[in-house]
Amino acid sequence: MLVNEVRWVEAWPLPVGVDVRQVYGIVFDSVTGAVVVQGDNGRYNLPGGTPEPEDNADLVATLRREVHEENQLVLADWAPVGYQLVSENGRAPYVQVRYAALLEKADPIAPDPSTGRAYGRVLVSPVDAAKLLGWGERGAAQLAAAARIAAERWGMTIAAARTARQELS
Image (cartoon, rainbow, N blue to C red):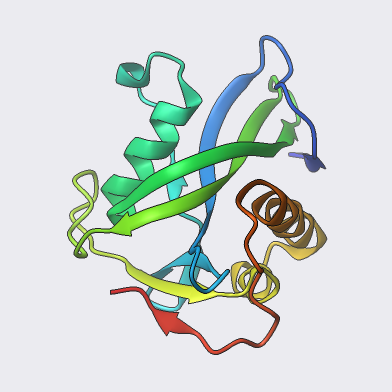
């Protein structure tokens, strides 16, 4: 029987010797205080992806590369939020990293070089993003922590729940 446990850890640095399988950005628009959510035929995700050897174990390099490859976003700044510690029965635990990031600009939508698919981009409040992602309490905690960082680090007013969605063109 496969047993999965996923635990949100709002701390930094990462545990030593644990494999990083995912680096996602909670990317804030400085004008609206909303976050970018990737849309894919009714399914939603945060911008980001998997570390590659060319990233040389640099998680920020992974973040910057992946958000541009998948969503054509250029980041102005970033700060670690925490990580999910994932344990699967019989396997070593691994982490899924989360960064808060500040959007510098959005280039025109283009296909992801890895998949050939072009993804939509919507701006929504962090509260609404948590609901779209469907990650439950862990997701809500990640987005709330990122919103606190964005407000403190970049002095932005965070978009309120139920703020109208905007397409990021």
